[in-house]
Length: 238
Image (cartoon, rainbow, N blue to C red):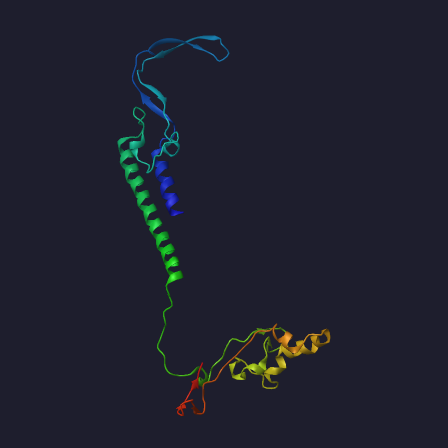
């Protein structure tokens, strides 16, 4: 938008005074007394005295549509020979404005090229940057941990309904807790099994409809003897 505005404005200033009239050579051919004829062919008795020798003629002052010629940027040099209409001050102003519009277009083009380069570069090069440092603290060791659990909020209920099997992850991942009922009370998978079992759907088929939430605790496993008689101590983490 900025680039288009700069270019159109530069052409606007070159078209002043927008009358398509240019000064022509002075001549005395029109001096003297002339009878005036009306449009209907009648001749008026009045005469017109012409004393001036200045003449004008038509010239195209629209550089933007100058008979198909390429006239960019909008500069005074595109005026046709013998059809110059700009004043000296106007030529100076339009020269500055014309080259300024070129600079604006180049600046806008560079901005778009940079954005395109960054987008293409992101397709072939990893752009992820880590923030912070590893503290050596497991997620499960944080007292205030919580995770995203698919839920459905209903105005008539104080706590939301859970759209996942609550038996597949620890209740500590919830951000809320009902002091009266367990989280399983809000488990929609259990309601679905009771309602859809009569339609011939198995529990596994119904379970595939809901989201899966999994959480693996870090834990120390017992030493396992390897095939060479040694021992391997493994640890699974998050």
